[in-house]
Length: 71
Image (tube, helix red, strand yellow):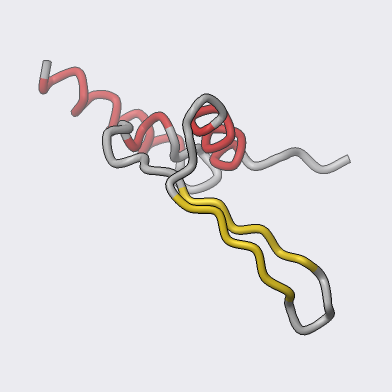
């Protein structure tokens, strides 16, 4: 059984309680209806979104250290 990538889970978590900025629906070349939803995440800290499937463990740890140093 395949595991959902961490970044996708994080995006779902962050956007779950937000209103969408734009919803678009269109039909693809196969006649399937495709939904595209955009959210404004400009105020969201990237470390809350990007998971270890995008960054290696060392990158995540370095990002967290920088975040703590800024405080």
